[in-house]
Length: 474
Ligand code: ARG
Ligand code: ZN
Figure (cartoon, rainbow, N blue to C red):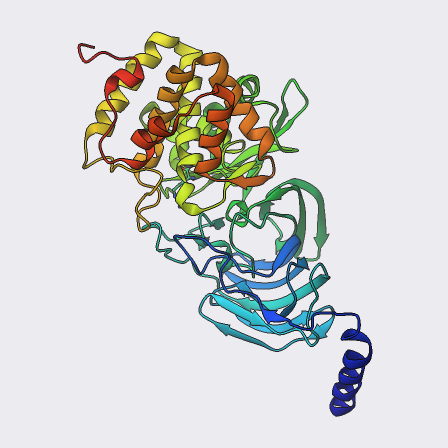
């Protein structure tokens, strides 16, 4: 039977495939998409359009049984291709319904379709897998990222490369896709993911939560949460749904901490343009993990956000919200460009501060932050070439925001507040680089700002405080 199939395929290939010029020179896709800092992230040769992730989750033991379906298009003639996938056991791999041979080594899952795939050909990959997902320690950050099982529940915090801990993925922002999540959890638990909750399907002792994320999304922004959450759902004046999930005992604290979210959206819309996605909200994890993440349409926060954070909770809530525009709608083309996320989200906090307290208070804040940035122990220089083992260092946040404030003073408010929304429109649902941002700033200001940006982004020494409109006497 097998031999017969092989012969038949061979005959088909020589008589029909070859004359049509289909995939004659098919080559394996590359095992990295070309990230300069992290060359093994993502893969070459195809473009994923949609992920359907069917996950059966046992919260107490952290057992996961998954079926991931990827709808993709080949961007070259492919004899084989890779997905990023860590640790979990694979039961089967199918390409267009046919069992396909594969090799799983480290982060790379290499799949060989029975027939080569031709450029522009749409194809479907199904991977069935199971196991106990564990977080990973990326080279870029001293944190355990990806799937995390904690006391009472589960969260997934992927940035930058943890998505591969729970599903097979082209794990790089350059390949955005839409997602369907079918999350089956034991009755009594709530399962949260990106996008809109379409259905809740009871099934005996279990419940399936169906989430649709219809806006293109980078894999590092995908998320899943399982716990005994309570939902607080409201609408903004513009009709945008806000759904916030809190651990059941913290509903009141959550409502208080997040009370200004709708107001923040309204303010950011006046500066950046319309909120870019179909829905927003937050999920508070019942664990104090010490950071927050701008997971698309549903930012996630550690429990500490509810207890004041020394009065800083409002700033981090504004920060993650601003990432929906800067980072999520327009994402970095290279991880090296991370200041395009963090510098902009931090400057958005400062704009919110200015909106609330006025420009004099902003000036004081800028002076204080310049002081912080001057301390080489606190903030290393060259933020457009950050350390690849400390990607999220304080400099990309703080000096990144100072760079934008200096740009605002350099080109004036009218041009600066044209650059921000134009940037978002031009690279909407896509990725961009630092060079793209400099080019846009040059274009809209009608100037050559290369020297200006060199000082702020590519030199160790901090530019003089006068560039922030502050005299040394200040
Ligand atoms: N993008 C996050 C923020 O808004 C970064 C948090 C750093 N940790 C991480 N695992 N990526 O600040
Ligand atoms: Zn951030």
